[in-house]
Length: 591
Image 1 (cartoon, one colour):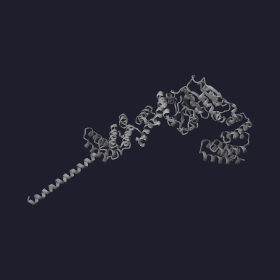
Image 2 (cartoon, one colour):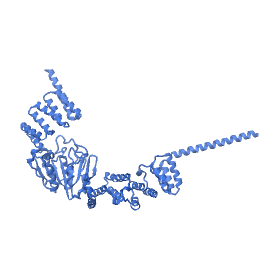
Image 3 (tube, one colour):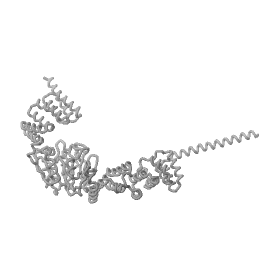
Image 4 (cartoon, one colour):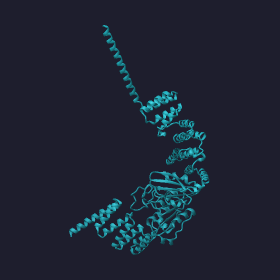
């Protein structure tokens, strides 16, 4: 081999070796990238944190940075870099990565991370930011005692201005979340922690909630002690308070609620109220506007929807929710009307309350309910309230009302043998409205609450009540005395011209007297006076059907469906009219 050939051969071998080396490096990097790509966040975190714990902080940081390149939005890696930065005293790095975290509960930083960060900020005289960090730690860490100790001993709150609005909101949410979860012991603990932060500057709202929560769990002496201190310290503010009470929801299953209204005055009396059939919890509770002025606390049993019968609230849940609370009162009163009166007797009798029940009724009761509703709805309650001869509930009802009379005398008296009955003939089932029209309802309630006496019914005042004349007129119509019925309902309408129940009765009376034209004219005018009443349009339709004016009946039915929707009664009427029309046409053809 000559010299040229040798040089060429050596150069080719060298190029080949370089090529192999470059290929090897390329392959190595591909494998390396592939290996790292297959690593999870947890792999990096475990490796980096182990390095941190063994003091190899720089190696740990390199691992965290590599993870950050692959997973830039993962909050846990930002938390790990924060730990590194705190350990190495790099405040700027802490600030950058702290701002990348939204959910501090999820990343689970230890308490000392918040403390060390706050101390670093304190060195730079950023005291409010330091306090924000500590308060964030208090509301985030499950074990926050060390943080609370730092606040108390090293950064005491002298004025509320030292706490930013953001932190104040955070503390509010910290407390409210526990209350919304109905974890009363946790709620008490959290409020006490917040109070330890504010110290002498603790706000009224926290202290009144704390007093209420101590009542809820049955620590009445402690509750009373806090309330007495508040009444003395904030006497002027309480007098000027717009509401005069504070509220906590004690129970909520999605359909029924139990609400506790605490008067901002010293009281030893609680009134337990129950919503009637058409009440919903978006509006004030039963008799709220009257009771809140009487220096009583209120426990209100509420409903989310109208026309439901509170079968979702068990007696056991009711007792578990309120028993410890009501034990702290010297006097306990329950009050309700219709469905609410049923609730007062069924639930509150278990608390040995004094009870005022106006026309108690459970329309879906399998024995004592309405015939058209029996078996149509699920009835989960006991057939009768638990037998209780220790209490003497006051039951106000109309003995002329067959449904109420049967329920009271054949049902309730067996459960409450010492019940005190107040019989008010011709009040109908609407006892509450009747007493209100007479001007007696408020007196009835307050006599029971404040005097613990049986209220007296002054029948001379019934002349003020359109309900009395309507119910009496209805009784006359049922006894085939339409002339008397018409006189009575006309008088009722002079007392209350827009009372739709009176309008309905008059339509029935006129039809019975075969005064169809007058009945139709009155029904049409009544429909305008009571546009939301769904019964009056139905009565008008029936009148047109009765006189054989099917076209007008169909016209009125379509108008009612357009306004109220395709309800079952309207669709049933429409079908019946169409059948009568077909029959009428068929008969005409035959003739």
